[in-house]
Image (tube, rainbow, N blue to C red):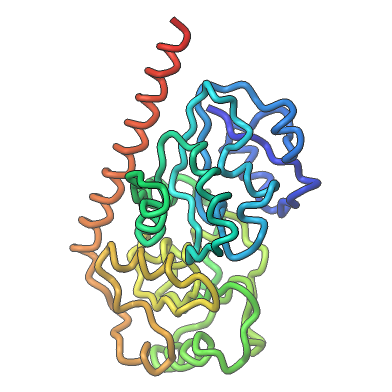
Length: 316
């Protein structure tokens, strides 16, 4: 299968991902804008949309003409459509947008989402069974991700370090940074920041590549984050971690931690984090992740198989 290449004039892509995409993804030769998708859609039997925040509803774009392409509204009626683990964040829809959302969801033949709260919400408004599937990053094991780590990528420090990975600029006295200072001093850890930092003259790695990102998580002694995927890769690499409540969309982190039995790692203040041990026992967690991974793969394989059977029936 191929991924439809997006028109980079519409959505700029950071150059640091270009090499990774070219090496690991099979992309269509043509780039598509929202307009060209509708006028001359790519010719495939099955189309999949997902994952992450492609169905985000906290702005008008989520169900606008531009955002509607992520609901596969451009696909011919005789083709099969699948949504795999898209996220709506915190699914709050104004009444004036509800009919539009229901209409877009009718485009999807096999419907799954990432968060259980979103599945319940969509089941209520559509009357359909909506499956909860894990984020694609969790479909791969730690060993699978390690295959992307070339030997030339070194850890950011030879000393034990605390990895801090937060989304969006935060105040100096934010809970994430207050706790980072506390726990790093208590455990004698160097602090490594990916992206935004708390301006204490510490190293900042704002444009890490995918292999570097994985390496930093794999070799960290401890992680502080307020992002969904920071939480995911902490779990994948069996790290002690603290998942702070983000400024927007906390549902995605809370849902994941509930599924894997780590709800207590979701914290809202530095004082709340201080009472938690930095160490975690992953034996039970691994079993739950494996169960979630197997169920999600089975659902996706079944949807693809049924879609293939439908296409063969149409062609006969």
